[in-house]
Structures are given as structure tokens and as C-alpha cells.
Image 1 (cartoon, rainbow, N blue to C red):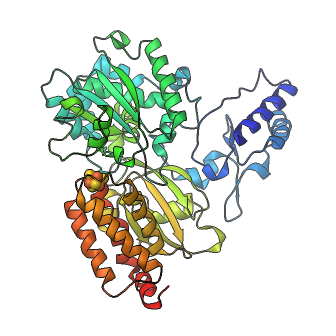
Image 2 (spheres, rainbow, N blue to C red):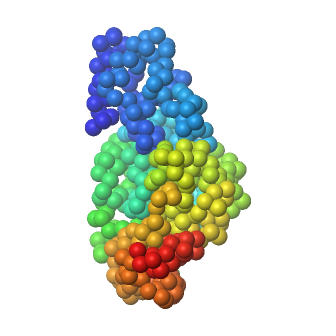
Image 3 (cartoon, rainbow, N blue to C red):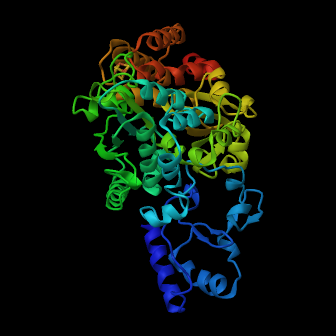
Length: 511
Ligand code: SF4
């Protein structure tokens, strides 16, 4: 609503000054600066106005658009007081490298023409006209891209498995059931750049020999469903989906399936069951979906962010993507910065950036003069990283060594005023609530753990509670059926590793 009012005021101001034929007003999606909205970028210089209210519109038009003088008070003011008027000046953007988010905030979200103007469909044309399926898979392998949904499995290897299967039918699936608290990167891509996912899924279909795709989008993302539907219809209208795409003999189409609010459907076998119309429950693997997936057929399933990286890799080459990041974690990763941080938002950075750069440079530090205490990465499946490790380069290996994970990219910052036992209890409460109940370790084990945590935070903890928590956590990790249960104890184990004194203080002081 805030943006709409500002947009209307700006449109009126432009019209009233007779600039409607010289200034083009484009409504775009999110630039990732959640804390600063509504924002307006004035091109070609890229002046970036933050928290623009309807009453600011007149000054932007008279001062900037008519006289060329930017409005300083609306520009980003860094925590050290410096004014950073253009997007290219802003510390929030300087360390970012946007591949998956390349078009987000820059183009009209559902305009095929604007997508094409940003090199849209160059990758698909290249694939259909110049490459064999094996060459496409090789390029993805060379890029080192790993699944961005959490598991980090090499995407090209997964595609190779499916390409190698002999089957009368194969499927492509996009996992858009993003449910981690504090993660919203998939939502941004689906809403703001839906064609990037559609084009990439089509390329995936060509690469592995599939002619049918499903995009599973969570119910809680109505705008994403709307934009994706519009983009699908438009792509079909102009022959970018359907039979004989771009005059080739390759045919491919995509259907949307809307989730029904179950977090566990983000787990790939539960998601496939849900698409098939069955109860969304995980099943044991093997067989893996690459061998026996949707309707028992070989299936490539990747999440939204993974798909959003495919087209730039095809255009620029796998080596280009692999030149970013660290030795084993190539490319860029989207993170959501949330919690006790000045610049909450959505950022995409090369793997290997340090946590300090994320928090202090991009995030603008912890507000209110408080000290940074920890970052919870990987949402409810992850763990916390305390201040002592602020200079750790972020990648899959380093975070695993610290007892956390990259996960889907949620990064919640907590300050010195946060109780880490409460934080762990919050995450365990979430996973306990979302447990599908199919297997005992997760259904009962997480419940027992939560009861102990509740006891501890009410000042009723007793000797032996922490040992019992650790024993339960390890047995759930070892025996739960799916990733939800296997990772549910992580926030407890990690807070016990770094902040055990807080658990002990609750028990000893009975608080
Ligand atoms: Fe269901 Fe939890 Fe078992 Fe996964 S681990 S199958 S969510 S009960």
C-alpha cells in the first residue's frame, strides 16, 4: 500500500509537470532493501531514493527530474553518516554480485519484452541451436553449481543421473515451497523474475529429455503464483512453451501446483507425493528422484534459486560461474538478512564472503549500539555462529565445520540481548509443529526435547537435562526419516556448543 500511494503521487507529479513523454515510470519488484522501502531508482545514473513517501514526489520531480539536482535527504545514509546517493555508492550493494537476482528490481515483473531486453531467452536459443543435451549438462557440471535449497548437491551431477536414465517419460520440477522462517529469496525470484525460472526449467527439460515440468509454489505466495501464471501464459502465447519451441523439434510445458501450507512439502519426496495428489509425506531414499521420482519416472528437482542461476551459466559458461566463490562452493548465494541488523533485506554475494562483511558492510551492523552476539544460518535446520567466528568465510564447508549449514540462506542476526536458549526453543517449536508425524524419532523425540527446553526456560530445569537433550538430539539425527527430523536438533546442539553457560544459568539460577 505504501508503494502504491508513492507511485500514484509520482505519476501525478510527472504528469502535472508535463514530463510524461520524457520520463518513463516502470514498476519493478524488490531490490532487496527491505528496510528502506518504498524505493525509487532514477536512471541512467542510478540515484537511489529510500523510504519515499507520497509527499516527496513533487520534490523529486522539480529538483531531480527538472533541474538535475538529487534530493540528498532521501538518499541512503550509512551508519557512519556518509551519504551514498547512487546505488553503485551504497555499501549494501557494493559487495554483492547478483546472478540469481539479476533482474529483480530492475524490470517490470511480468513483461516478457523487458525480460528479453535483459538477455532473456538468449540461453534457451543457444541451447536449442548450438548445444547437445550432454553439452548442457557438462556446462552445469563445470560451473560447480550446488543445489541452493539446502542440501548443496551438485546440480550437474543430478542432471547427469536423469539424462542417463532410459525412460519413456521424465519430469522437471521446481521446488518453490520455501518455508524456512526468515527466508524469502525464492519468493522474490518467482514474483520479480518468473521468466528466468521458466526459461531455465525449459533448458533443464532439453538437457535431460523431459517434456513436462511442474512448478510447486507455496500457497502463502499468491503474488508469486499470479506472476508465474501470467508469465507461463505469455510464454505459451509466443511459442516459448509448447510444441516445437523456437522452431526446434523440442517441446516442453509447465504446470503450477499450489502447496497447502505444509512445511514438510519442501522435502523433495514429500513434494513429489503432493504433486501426485497424495499426502505430502517423505519416503525413504533410495530410490532417489533422479531414478524414480514423480509418478515413478526420472525427475530433476531443483529449487527456485538453483533454477535462477542456470541461464547466466549457459550464456557465460561454466568456467565463468566457477571463477566466483571458494574451492568447493562455487558461485554466488542469496541470503536473507533479518533480525537485529540495520539493513534487513535480500542480498546475493560470492561464496567466501566473511560473516563480518555481511553483518557490518552490507547489513550496516547491529542497531541501537548493541553488540553482535551470533548469526543463525540455515533456519530451523541450521545452527548459530558466534562473534568469535565473524571472520569465517561463508561456504558450505566452513559453516558445516562450525556446526551450522548454509541451508536455504536464511541469516538471522541476534544481539547481546537475546537469550540463546529461547532462540533454540523457538526453532525447535517450529520444527516440532511442522513434523509430519510419520516417524517416531521426529514425532516423539522433538516433543520430548521441547518439553525439556520449556522446563529449562521456566526455571524448572534439573541436573542431567543437558545430557538428556544431547542424547535425544543425537539419536533423532541418526534415526529420523527425512531432513526435517534429522536437522531439527541442530539449533539446540549448536547453542549448547557455544552458549552452554546460558543453559546452565537457567538451571542453576532457576530463571
Ligand atoms: Fe515426518 Fe519428521 Fe519423520 Fe520427516 S523426520 S518423515 S517430518 S516425522
